[in-house]
Amino acid sequence: MPVVESVITVPVPPELAFAVSQTVAPVRYRWDPFVREQHFTDGATRPGKGVRTFTRSRHGLTMVSEYVSFAPPSHVGMKMVRGPWFFEMFAGGWRFAPGPDPGTSVATWRYHFRCRPAFLRPVAHRVGRWLLGRDIRRRITGYAAGCTDPEVLAAARRALRSDE
Figure 1 (cartoon, rainbow, N blue to C red):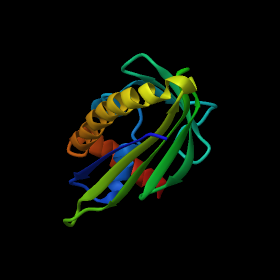
Figure 2 (figure 1 turned 90 degrees about the vertical axis):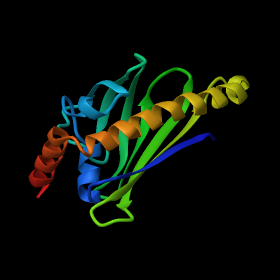
Figure 3 (figure 1 turned 180 degrees about the vertical axis):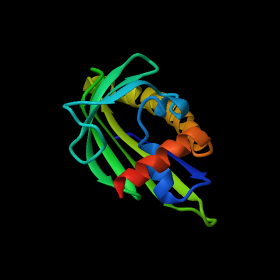
Figure 4 (figure 1 turned 90 degrees about the horizontal axis):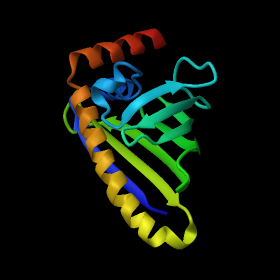
């Protein structure tokens, strides 16, 4: 099964790095170049295990995903519930760990996928690794910029305070 991973060090501690990653619209649109539309479904108002989200990508593709793990400030995981026809399976996890310097974090984003139909997998997986890899690198770079954006940081700090 193909895996795509991207790692970056950001200038905020893990609690804040995690909170930035979980910002919602409209703040999320400031840093996340992949997402054109995103919202919780089924009446949920905040992230958590079992919560589902609807996402429309910059490519126009849509996906409903479900949080399969939610453990602030260290990690979050999701799986596709419904999505583009060419994904038989899609899942991802984001991890946040203390960085090499005080007040920094290492963010590691990893995605697993399997394409269909099976006879096209050799080609589809190569193309998928390339395309998804490019998007994830752009996305994590945008996330790192969000970790320095005063408006994004203020929203993330408000979210942290509301969790107390």
